[in-house]
Image (tube, rainbow, N blue to C red; front, side, top):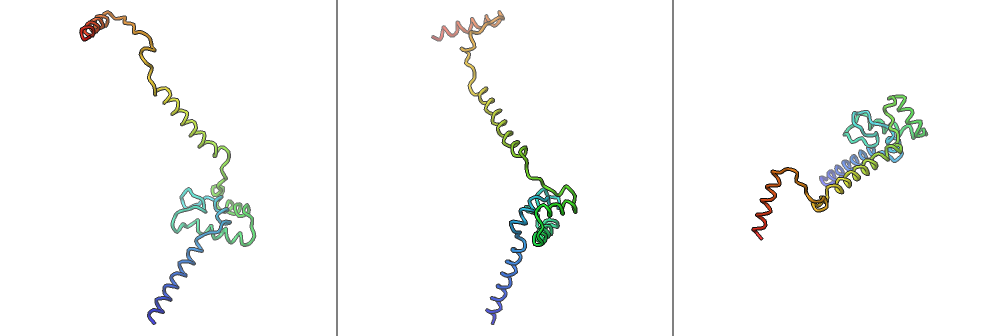
Length: 155
């Protein structure tokens, strides 16, 4: 008898867990529409990707989207209804060409700057390529002559 109660308890808990996850996991259609709506809980995510636990906007919005789709409303009609209820700030426009190009252009520009920096400072110019040193100061000429004499003594 005790074993039967334990089995029933485990079965009941498993059913509750499966029912809970099934209701929290939205369908692809709900996620497609939810990706075009910004969550109003304070995060910067869409309704489909809001990661707040027990979000007070995302979960009811997903349920509302599912009900609207069950009635037969199109994606645009659902989005228009949310914009009408919550204002234009709830709509997330799909990224345009500017949104796709800017990150790649910034990366390309950054790599170009790095390449120019390495090209300029990688190999210093040799002193022989710069030509002979001209000494204009007589004080330096005196020291240069002294250095030359000292070096000739070492050889």
